[in-house]
Image (tube, rainbow, N blue to C red; front, side, top):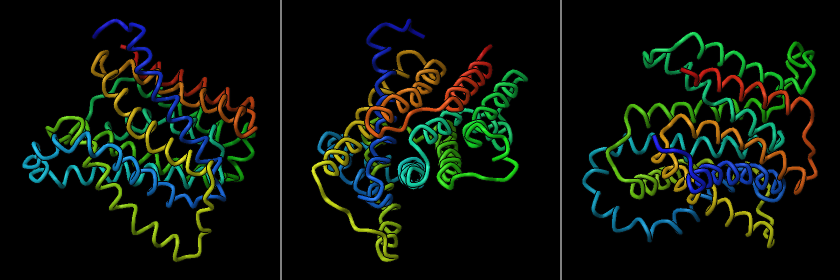
Length: 295
């Protein structure tokens, strides 16, 4: 593992910044773009931008893609199709800060799923960390009032984001256990393609059920270009190269900058100021992941 130099720190800081922007700008478009339409548009545009750069590698690795298409399809449907669609559905009723804080607990889901279903060995410290992080998630879901937990007074978007966490957990384990032996560019392009195919019928159903049409404006176009380019391509590229430099453990701590950036961007763009329970939840989630990651 290399020392974290300024270039590596920048590589690992850009993805959480862009992912936070993804949640905040998706929240900004509530009422202007239906959530599944936004998800489909994001990945269609991203694929159109990325495909020319990946085309040569796709042709070279076409035999490998055909041989392992089922694995690639499942990974693409979970990581591109389901996760992002659930996230955009979540911000319809939840805040960007809540969504990113709940997403920050994903390592806990990964730990529990690995122990329960994949036979992954775990340590007591990891379970203690999982419990602390879960307390952070509950603090966010309760919005600072434990009575909300007793009354099951959850916002629908919070629960949808928990479902998104589950899909990302399955995506992570498939990457760890069944990732096809393919380079980054053709693998990401294929994931995007399968994700688009998965999202399309649900977007058509959303439209058929009477969801509001897209209200085109310069803001809508700018946000679509943002979510297609920065969180979808640049963040994946920076994350992939950052992990290659320092391994898989250190980036987890950088990923937990996402709710911090989301809080700042929400205050600047949406006027949604973070609350005390957001800070408490963030501290518990980060502390839990730190405990779980200690040797």
